Amino acid sequence: MSATTATSDIVGLFPKGTDLAPDGEIVVGGCRLDDLAERFGTPAVIVDEGALRARAREYVDALSHHWPNGQVVFASKSFPCTAVVRVMVEEGLGVDVAGGGELVAALAAGADPARLVVHGNAKTDEELAMAVGAGAGTIVVDNFDDIDRLEKIVTDEQRVLIRVIPDVEADTHEAMATGHAGSKFGLSEPDAVRAAARLRASDRLRLDGVHVHVGSQLLDTAPFARAVEAIASLGELGEHAVYDLGGGLGVRYTYADRAPTVDEYVRTLTDAARAHLPANARLIIEPGRSLVAESALTLYRAVTVKRGRPRALVAVDGGMGDNLEPMLYGQRFEATVTSRVGGGEPCDLVGRHCESGDTLIRDVPLRAPAVGDLIAVPVTGAYCYSISNNYNGARRPPVVFCHDGEARAVVRRETYEDLLRRDQ
Image (tube, rainbow, N blue to C red; front, side):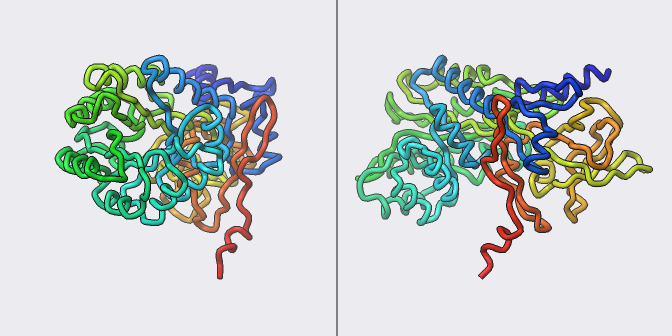
């Protein structure tokens, strides 16, 4: 691979519109990464706000074109940052929440309660009461216990969907598969039929339709189509039933990955819907990872470089505290020195935590890495923020929005005082 090819390849993983300054420094959202590091410190999550908004509009436009009676709902678990959710709300998306904290964040971001979709395989009485009290438009019933609880909580009327296991195997990490027969989520088809009968008899729960989800980080659209066919057999939902088809579209994390486009994904779903579902059905899709992953990167500073081993070992000032995806899911990322982009010697990029598993990327090319260099890891907008933690007393990083050369922190870096704040 030539240096030129390597440069274009790595830049292609950053948010659309990313460029190089004349001196070679990466520029995202019109902001130089070295300037951002100086101003906000490292590690830091850098979001190209323009790219984030453009992706949201791409989803809205695709669904409205292929199925006008549809709604795009942001799976906020993928990046449950209030500012990110606010962008989605401003771009016309509903919000999917899977817990009390995500519900609070969605409301703080200005989400219309009527356009909330509430998920969870183990919703507590408190969380259901919060959702009902907030006026959440749709609650997805995952089990019979949800029905029991809602019957006690709801005093007026609550619209619900039944989550159905489609028994569809998806080619993804085991922890990301949700539609197979052994999934902890949803009800089997026979149980879903029983749940539907019970809901139809309820004087306060209104069955609007069904929900299905087959997994996350799927790079093949075929399982999505099979899931639509699987839920069509339920029947008796009516011509205007709601079919929430979930999310799960994968993204390109590495040079070798090939991900379907948003239009290809939406077209697969809507073609299957035309073949198997009522013509007047209302479709909901819930993208998460594919909405936010590519709009962000994580910026680190190299603290230590060790040579004299099979590969140079480059340790940065972050790691599994801000990105658990490699450790939990085996997810591969790429990286580059921000001022010497692309190519270089094979290195192992590791974190600062006291854990041998704290390896961000094995065998990643970096050009002449040295202590003090800034290193950027692209495509970190999904789940990295969600599952960040305080291992070894690490302070969770700030989230910085960049747009047209202006940068602002939408989440500040944690302080050491924050780490003690809950002590009694």
